[in-house]
Length: 264
Image (cartoon, rainbow, N blue to C red; front, side):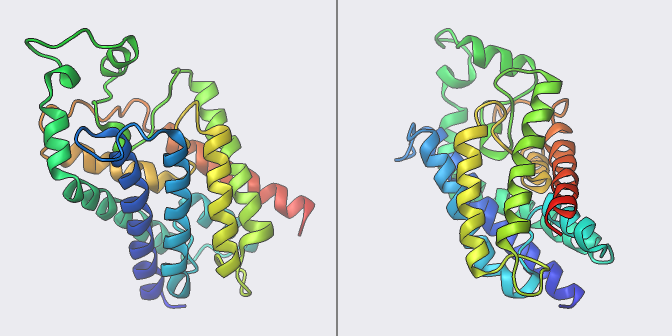
């Protein structure tokens, strides 16, 4: 596959991943959404279906890595690093496009949510929860969770370990079950298997941090959150932002190392 195919495929695929994955977060979170308060099951399955759709769309072009941790793991497995920058560039751009599309699709809901005094504070607002106060003090705005992940308990070691563990599980599943015949990306059956693994990781390991397990998935939308003209949006929590980038990359490397030692 050519560099242009890789870049286009990863851009389109990651945009689809984020518009559907971020979209389910918006649907569950935002005021005046019909799916508001649908819960964690909706989010976990929504992200799984987002992965499946993105893989099937972009697979023929790029092999559907859609995740820098997958790209790094495949490079470690096969020793092929030449196309890594192209993959990473497409993934980051696609994630930013997808997050922007979520904002457009839920524009009215964002406006209603972020001008509600009970949500953002102000005269007449009721007392906010301790969790909301803590999040605001840490620089996380009231809709940041639509775009990026954040921890329930801020503990660097635990948060980093959670992202590493979740990503190792994902990478081992991809490398042992998900690859296409060429071994350079996800195949048709592999897309379904990987989607179900993402659901499993979300249900089992997503509670502490929101399971980024994908640096582009977290960083791209976080940048968009920082840039968008959202009223009362609060901070983008940049002090935490390195964990969902570094953790999955470490997890990808460890997963590839385990594969090479145990399966190759």
